Length: 129
Image (cartoon, rainbow, N blue to C red; front, top):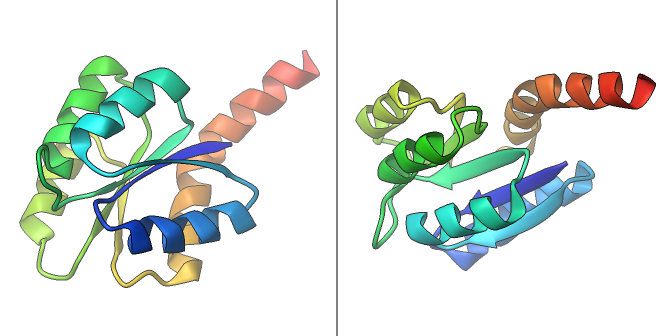
């Protein structure tokens, strides 16, 4: 499974990327919303983790734009405490879940497994045909 990790902080991309790699995921990184859209179109990941507060284009707008590019895009929001309104707006635009910073590995695993469950089932059906 390929995951696009979007966060303006390199440290956060590294921490989240490390958790995802331990889960067996291939990780692609982007540092803002505009780069996220470009990388999504190029790599077509199975899942996107999207920070909310970033320069240029924030995560809420990026979710809206990604869903225009691909209505079936699977997106998990990454937020700091106190960003409830942004998280709710992102979910209205189609985000599936959210993870609160600082990351708890078990919460990341749970959100990713839940989001990718449908993708894995589809892959299994394709392989078994």
